[in-house]
Length: 136
Length: 136
Image (spheres, rainbow over the protein chains, first blue to last red):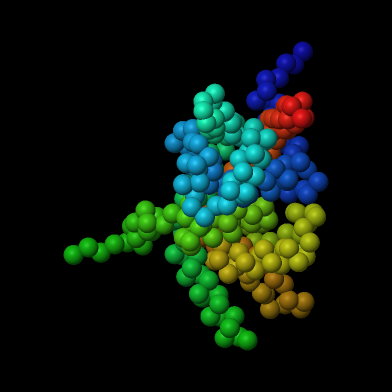
């Protein structure tokens, strides 16, 4: 008799799932979380629950439409929870769920990687553009 | 007299750079690396240099156009190096650069996260879709 815990089932499933394969549902999920606004919203929520307007301030330049779409899709995927407080006017805030917390370290690292390695990437681009224009 | 190492300069720069800000070059770089094919190509190259055709086989479903665009952009950003060998026919292979190696662990984690948590995400979606259709 084998009774598997949820964690064991996930480990087993991870062997069968393969995000390299376009038809695998994990491929689509990888595409979904490979999104700059997903990373940024999750990192913005690391400090604790935030109102919509606070998220807007943390990410100047995000449009209302994009922020609304992003939080809704994060809510649907179970990464963010939305709470509407019975106040006048209604106060709505967003926070990470336990599942969202598991993705946070990865999202934080990708943001930090971009911030730490931009100089090297820009040097590489200058070099590449120089070489390819020389050969043109 | 302060002489800073490259690593120290990058740490300092990371304080000033802020990927939350749309105008910051790191925001654009975050957007660039937040791409499913970027993750998958880097993870595919973790095993060692790969020919173009080997990459195609690892990622069934990727179009030639998308793979060509992805490897070229990774090459331009200094994450992947392309080597053409003097053989007939010419053999071209791709490998991670040292800079690409620094991004690999993050890309591997994001792929693994998708593979490990797909069940929880799907449960959350079913619940969300049930709740939102009930209230309609």
